[in-house]
Length: 29
Image (cartoon, rainbow, N blue to C red; front, top):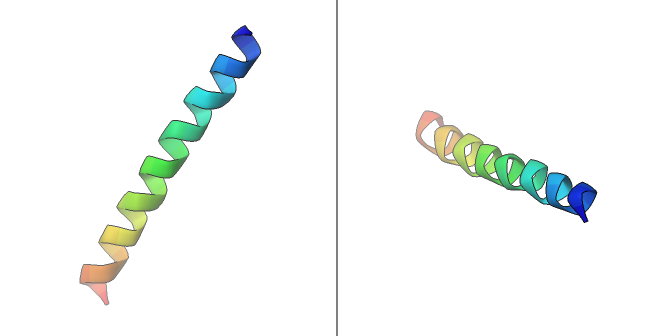
């Protein structure tokens, strides 16, 4: 169960980074 929690936590920051990258790319373009 602990291993599953670690995987979920790692996935959360990845999604946030993708959203930030997309937002930063839009204004730069």
